[in-house]
Image 1 (spheres, one colour):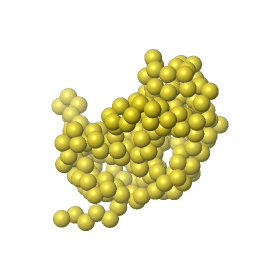
Image 2 (cartoon, one colour; image 1 turned 180 degrees about the horizontal axis):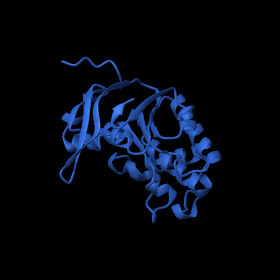
Image 3 (cartoon, rainbow, N blue to C red; image 1 turned 90 degrees about the horizontal axis):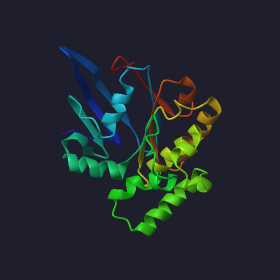
Image 4 (cartoon, helix red, strand yellow; image 1 turned 60 degrees about the vertical axis):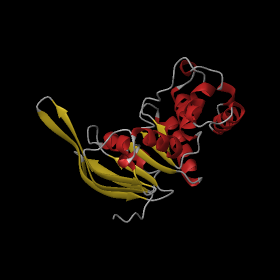
Length: 225
């Protein structure tokens, strides 16, 4: 039986895709671990497999081979429903393109992950307003996404990711659409979340962003570089 010593333990991970008659090896034979309260960057060029890896770590993309343990749970031995419960409890996602719902206000977008938590409406409002305030967006809580700047939309995406207080935050190119100054502000926010006890795993191809994390996992052509 596998001995689990880390918050996240990845063993002999592989992911293949079929493209016509060709099998694409997106990820091959990866082994690594991440500990509680680490801030880890997954670095690599476009097409290196890093976003695929992040989606697998988040329970969204079934690997072709290997195992992932999160807090001792064998993630892909869980049923689809169990994995959905796991994500709502453990994982906060910050997507590359924000993925905010255009017709919902900032407050409504931030409350989306709480739909499955069974919290009372008043409690949901209170928790959402707390994280909106932390992101400096209280005055914008009733605005729609297209009434916000790119940096403000990213802050909404971060607020949504942390509203359930998940221990793990997965961030896919969180500064990819932002200017340098705004990107550094966002990285400062992620750094402060890490200092508050969140484990953060961030995908990027930008070496400047790498400096904010404590450790880097380099990926090239689906392999650890």
